[in-house]
Image 1 (cartoon, rainbow, N blue to C red):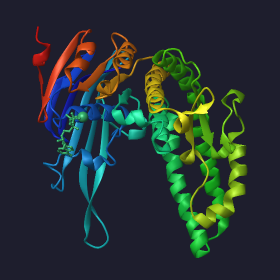
Image 2 (cartoon, rainbow, N blue to C red):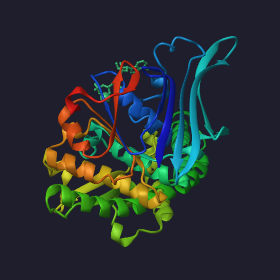
Image 3 (cartoon, helix red, strand yellow):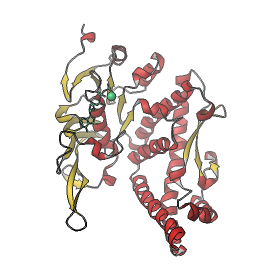
Image 4 (cartoon, protein in one colour):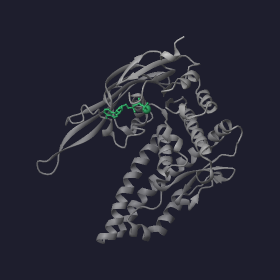
Length: 397
Ligand code: ATP
Ligand code: MG
């Protein structure tokens, strides 16, 4: 998987950008706040159809146009998937909608085209595959459960379209169901409607849980190997899954079946409490990944170094997982992450990237360049939302 051409319009601090990209290694360098991360964000958006950092798509519109009621931003690309060129384009556009009476409000629409044919986001995620690695990802182990669920969801969605659809469906069902739970509590709505929403919740939710469990088996094996390499031989990393559906930690070796039946039983147990609280208490939106080293929970007992190394191993495993699932190595995007690592780990991250795999990395310090530059590299200087091909002065021979 490669991105060969990228064009941006009104995307963050890029008013206009048109560049060809190296099929192998590109190093983006330049001072702070020039647009290095923004460029990686645009590439990652093509794969996930969402930002790796923005809380909403509106943030991506350039400030220069954000007061315009018809503002838009475009990310257009030529990618190469199994050697075949594909044009992939996303346009986010403010459009006016008539609300109540004469009031107009603007909504942000997302229009996607693949080879010029309009497509829905849900059918396009994973057309490009990419792994984004930024310093926040080093917080994956000790951070909030939401980060770990997102890690799983972004990873699996790129490889499995049915997962992506189930997830969208599931999230809608949770909202509707919560609404109903509160209506039962506050307005004495009929409780029998809940059976319909339970069935919907169980259908989408069971598929999500089963795919997560299958994925964690692969990710667990691969990240144990990476953790062993990174830590100098500790092969005890165990990645697990904790789910309210199963009253906690799931025994992955036992290949749990009957997820739907378990889910149903739990919903029956919890219905009283759910109505009282007005929220759905059990299901994949509440689940979590777990990590153990030598049997001890890494998020509770691991040193900071161990936690970061586990996170690193997981990220490397993500790329390998996508390769196995899609038959092709994903684009690897490393945002500032090398400078956060010691030289051994830095070398290991770079060594895990196969020659021929596309890598784009950003850095501000020359030392990180030197390691990466043992392979043929295209240097891009990023400055004020512009990009030009240029070697950094410190690398001149
Ligand atoms: P660093 O080395 O500090 O990580 P960077 O080169 O990665 O810097 P970016 O995160 O890409 O910098 O941000 C570049 C600039 O883009 C910042 O000055 C930021 O304020 C600006 N910016 C962010 N969002 C928008 C937007 N929607 N419109 C215009 N500019 C924006
Ligand atoms: Mg940055």
